[in-house]
Image 1: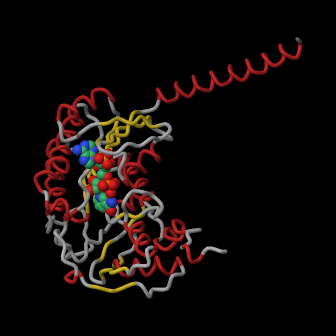
Image 2: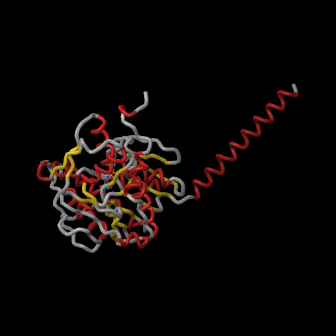
Length: 330
Ligand SMILES: NC(=O)c1ccc[n+]([C@@H]2O[C@H](COP(=O)([O-])OP(=O)(O)OC[C@H]3O[C@@H](n4cnc5c(N)ncnc54)[C@H](OP(=O)(O)O)[C@@H]3O)[C@@H](O)[C@H]2O)c1
């Protein structure tokens, strides 16, 4: 009998402690500022939710795909429908917005300019208008592809000169957003890469996918970017939210061709570059035209405290422990 009472007492204490823990957790959650992240099911948005949830009460917006993330409230909305956007802002009452949802594939934008314009331009402006009405800080992700690639490295004040529908849509969104929300923050992002095991499409994942299948990698020697890892990109976005206003370039520190990026990857993987095939942009016809060099000069962001990691070190970190089937020990 005494033993049973003792057990009840222990369990009761545990339950009580758990209840207090949940209660404190909820109070902390309630006290946190509210952050609306669109594109939460996408590559950058997922990482932004993951990073932001430690200090914000995060509402992650998805559309066709579902995600689950502890500490993040996932909401579904079609941002091309203004009524849904309005309801979303009313119901989540954000203190800040990271608008990362987009039709992010240049070839798709070229083939379906009207449809993709609705998310890339119209939705971005609707959300910016609502943020402006509520004096809510608003971060929009634009792209290095607003430039034609003939005068790199590009600074924020350089005139835009897009050569594709995607670049055109981003450039139009930038102007429209700053027109209706002059305090908005427009981050021009470079080529992003991240965990090759992730399901989100990114350059590293597609390169490794091809290598794993035993295929060859045809990579441009005449296309230059300033690539950035997605975790550095997210740190840059939160820094921009805190410290910037207007246009901000969030490029990596190194300018590199796609081919040399591939060489670095196979070198780190110990694969040798036998399966790398150098090629030129003109050898691979695509729907969307590709600028030759859209490297970003990000000194303004660096001066604010943006410190992207060294490319080789970041790739080593992402590819650590990665092995191809033939390399596994038997
Ligand atoms: N990745 C890069 O290398 C790169 C480079 C430069 C700039 N950027 C920019 O960075 C941002 C994020 O890019 P990303 O690579 O993360 O894109 P992504 O992986 O293609 O994700 C796109 C996101 O947008 C959402 N979305 C699309 N249409 C929507 C709609 N009608 N309503 C609500 N949500 C919608 C998608 O939701 P569902 O999947 O649920 O439908 C998805 O979460 C974009 O603005 C992109 O243009 C990216």
